Length: 155
Image (cartoon, rainbow, N blue to C red; front, top):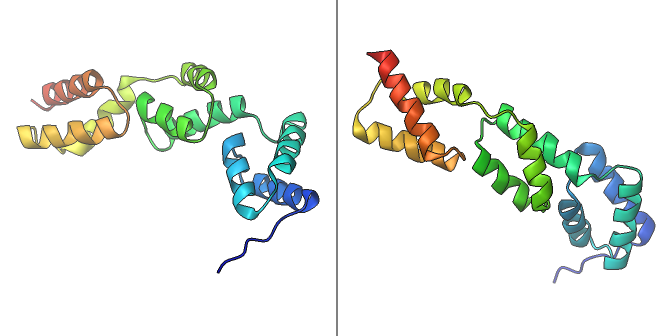
């Protein structure tokens, strides 16, 4: 049987600061990791208060940075970014603020669609392309517009 070791306040606080030293975490993520490590619930609340006070944890700022990274680096669309931030436990008002700060542009989607289609505009390939970009969080109208534009430019 696997007995979990209980962490005292100082050990849990050290664990939290070590985790935050590697990368930014949302409050929910940090809380879950500390619980799994064996920290007490009341200690976690004190640690989160401490982290908020010193701006080690800031869900609003985290949401903005994460949204921009997901868009610019992973090329995800608005819907998928919303979903990813929601899973991280970010409050919906922070998600809305973060999405407003990201400059979504269908011109960024066009080269991705062109590459995905590879000049093959058969129905089967277009449908596959649509499913791929829907999964990545783009709207159906954005995807269809880009496919039409790519097809027009290919003619």
